[in-house]
Amino acid sequence: MDKFIVEQHKEKDKKDDKYEYVENLPEGKIDQSIADYAKRYRIKIPEISIILAYTRHTTPEDATHMMESLRRSDIIIPESAGWEYSDFWLQTIGEKSSNRAEKSFETEVMRSQDGMKKDFVYIDLDKKELEKAKKNLIPVSKIMIDLLNKKPPFENALLIFKKCIEEGVHFQVQRELKILKNLAPRVITAVKESNLLKNKKNIEVFIYLGSFHTFIGKQLKKRGEKLDIIFPEKPYVYEKNIEIERKIRFDLKVTRQELVQAFFDYLQQLVFEISLTDQDEAVISQTIAKSITEEDIRKLYESSSGENIAGLRKSVFELIRKLL
Image (cartoon, rainbow, N blue to C red; front, side, top):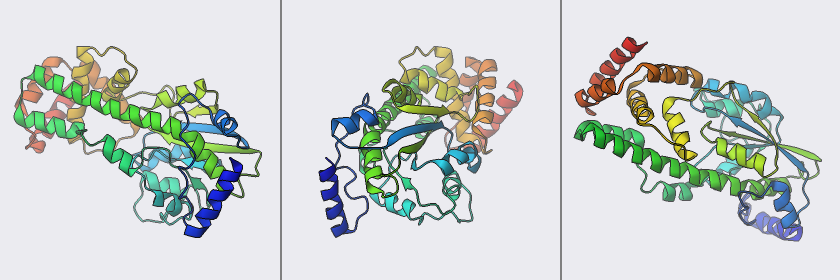
């Protein structure tokens, strides 16, 4: 297998495409560790440890708790559904500028590198795979607008909403399985590609994912990876809608009350204009869930229109003020 990799290096040099052969190593299995994969294909690798950070990735502040690990790690694996092969090269040589005026989660990640040329390895669904997986997937936000405009009976609206959530969770499961299968071959390829890494005794891989994806951490631990898991806060509080999605993900029972609360959570997401941190939003979400009634949500649904977001915003804010 080492000979195979050397031959691919020669072909790579001819075409001047740094990452063209990244998929020539076959997918792994979800229960196959990096070490087991390397042993299976007779590839000599350093000892590899993984830090898995669960985080929100919408604001610059969301990257704060990851900075030390981002700077220290040898390989960085972002959550990146829809990536393209060019992203490898662009990020490695730093062409994805970390000096843009606007700040975002992504620019903070790049700023953390401070000129260091590390490998960013992509193991999520690529652009074509993402397009295929999402072909018949309708965003929850669009479903909510459609429900508000077409106004099916509330009972029917809940059923449509739940089906949409379930389809979204199924899509996330596809991503998680792909990530687990791609981890070993992509990391090993990155190590063999790098003159610096292939001679190191120990390599640290840093993965960051949204906090929905705890199945990945459980599976990595189960298959024997050398693993540390970090959360931005402990205990970690989930928004009500994410809590319900995670219940569906792990085949747990979702009560009617929880479904109705998640329905409202998505309604308020249509109108919130305040940028909140993960825990701020989660605490608000859970506080409202404890106080709101199904009748409150039914009235809001029946009196709102998807074409009048301003009116919906006013109704949601009035209801939240009453509850808080």
